[in-house]
Image 1 (cartoon, helix red, strand yellow):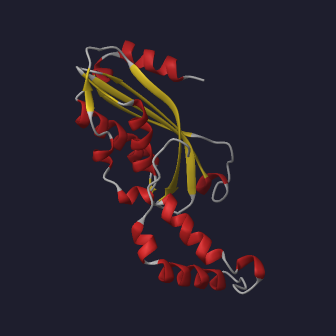
Image 2 (cartoon, rainbow, N blue to C red):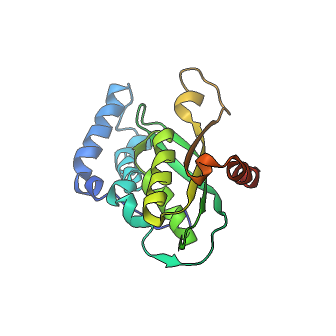
Length: 197
């Protein structure tokens, strides 16, 4: 993802041989010939992919927002359409979508690119969408102390689209509401109207 810091999982790197061995065993156990040409490098490719897609374990999401800036701005700030990719902890199947983050500062603001980094740090691990939504809202609320925070996450889950009930195209939408957004329906409505496509 261009412009977002790449987090790589060093535990995967440190255990490369073991992971490759186990991926090869899984290939055999599902009935594949792990020695055929198309699969010869699959264990190594899967391991390199795991370094990347599970890179969120390398960073404490609370540290990602970093420095805040004093700013006398107490109006709504929104960063929307932050694309994310994650892995469902129930099936280890991908899910992906967009995150919309809004907050009302109370004297402190955070760098806008840090919002995308926060999303990366939270999503690049085994997750559920509900936890992603809450974690982003809680971390932003703790780091910046805003009047209010609202996060909406949209996701398409392959564990629902390609297996089980097999409903491709269905989306899950979750929200987390903190502070003044919770008490003020007009603020919630403004945020939701601005993040609509």
